[in-house]
Image (cartoon, rainbow over all chains, first blue to last red; front, side, top):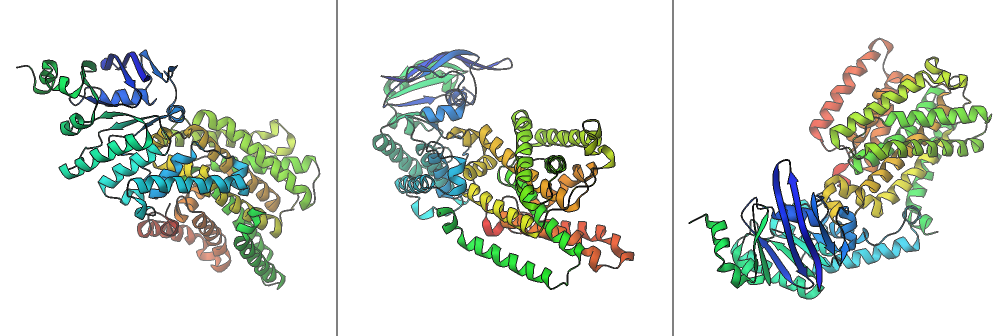
Length: 253
Length: 313
């Protein structure tokens, strides 16, 4: 079943075609990676799917619904979660609060409930804490719940961002370069975490990554982009031996 | 009931403070002027708290807060004059209505301008502040009662200790509850990273609008209390300089700190007005040398404000 589909999507910035006539499908439950040289347009694709950019041409479907032009908060509520290449945590909120915000954006109570601290407020607040602690526990961050997010070491900030995205209960999670700045041990750890996420939460993962070992090991399918276009698509094995991919990465021989 | 149970400590503390003030006034020591600036300091705290919600918690820089304070003041004064209100229980609904009207104006203005960010928002709010000042200067063309550039005269003096103290305490509690709720969390998240907040499902525009409307509502209420304390309104009381007063209080107290705003608001009024009592008249104007120096020192020693370390927002 197709969870996400891009149909002939293009995005221009002035005269530059950041994404050009791109089409692909993400199947429910798979781990699909997008790779490509710097500036290939990968993050732009994420920004298009998560509603930060509106495509100039083409359409995007999620669960067979046309979501082209939807605002990002609405897409989050529909079930599209994401992380960012350059970590965008709420640095002056505690670790626990970072995750609670995500939970509370979907579990609503009104202003009157807040002002008078009604039963509903108390119940949802309690549930939010429990749920958030659950996610922190999953990532081994529970003992740091009262730290400010900005004070966590880099690797844990990455994990917290994943926890925050998962707390929105997404159907698909877009993860942008999770291994950036990590050493080999951390990358192995991350690989396990990503597999665990997919199995535990039963979600689909769309991944942007440069770290080839991680990508080849974890992905079921891979899309290769260069200059805003898709140049190859297939299993890790097929991609490794694709001459176009080798050319894009190593330059024309 | 939960509301009162959870907040009983705060409510008792407020009652205790009220009794002390009442006793001091009863003793006959403070002059009328001292009592007046005490009430005024609560009003300033209330209005500054509104700006702290908008700027300190949500990060939306506003240079037009005094305009909303003025709208509240003029609206309530006009209503109480037309309705011939003389008692404090008649004044409460009038002040509330003035707050609602101010919030309504904030809603109309906030819709378009809250899409702007940072410097652009600052200029837009500044523009709104100037616009209100010009309208108030020419308000006698709308109604002779408003007085235009001559000022609004002959407002009944109704604001008393109970009104200004308990209304301020009430809204401090409401604000605290809002800050602790999901809305407060959204506001703080937006201030940290608006894009990230929208990526996890927060409708950032609506959240900012709620903060703006609520903050201006508090300014409107404060304006209503002010009008019935000083009995005379002039457009120059509500211009950019007044807005900057509120900004200073929020920044000195600490962005996103309720206790900071309370302390800084009281400090600000007692410093500027209180020095009039203490200092001999020949060196009175030197306070405008002293105050800026103190501001500079505070910013150097505690750049995040007096109280921010404690609450840590």
